[in-house]
Image: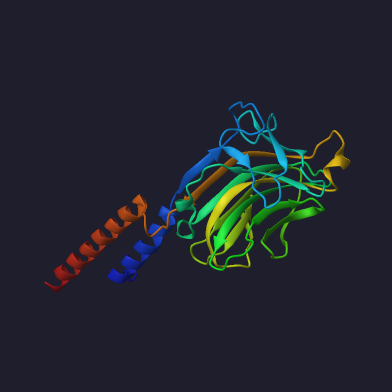
Amino acid sequence: MKKPNVWQVVLFTFLFSFVIAGPASATILFQESFEDYWSGAYTPGWVNAPYPPPAPEPLMQQSSVSHSGSHGLKLTADSVPQSWMWWVGVQVDTLSQAYLAKEYNPYVSVWHYEEMAPNIAGQVYAVPNSVTPNWNDTQFGGLDYALDQYYYGTGTEPWQPSGVNRTEGWHNFKFVLSAADGRIHYFIDGINVGSSIRDDFTNLGAVGLYTYFEPSLSNFGSNNPYTLWDDMEVGFHAQAQQVPEPGTILLLGCGLAGIGAAARKRKARKG
């Protein structure tokens, strides 16, 4: 059997190192499991989402419905300042915007419990900046007028279907701003379901959660619409080439040793 030459050893070592090392690990900037008790309308570290008109008032309550631990979040539409408003939102109060820049591959991940309630939907959102200024809110989750599947959209782009049916139970929503193409990529339960049309985003900006509903809040009577959430995380992925993995270093070392051994054998045969 023909023995591999030196360059085959180098190539195999290089490729195999990436298989073993895998992607660079994530750095977590914000993590919320809603386990600690709070009083008032907002859990510490969260605020009302700002809007051009007066902001609807949501109510953040601790819930016994949880993805992990003992508690999750119930985000209730408690009141609206104007009758035509059909949503409430909350956002994380302080985030390190420097690490939400595109070059860091920032991400947002959260678990949502789908109850399949008609005329109610939960969404996770961000307000990214872009090279060409525009209304850029990116929203991901259900639509209050569509029970068929989950959707994603950004600014004035039309809603894009994810191809994933809305089903009762826990689902993970995650989106990532890619340093490679400037687009926001959307994932449901770990599966990539699409990406934004725009490709000039520069960071993720503000991050939060929505409860959407229709018709107007007064039509719900005493049963105010709400959505259920848990285990929210905001972070970033360092570029793999910027942070060498231990497995890569080890295998490259083995590869160099193999090259040295092959060279010695060739010299011995020549002698």
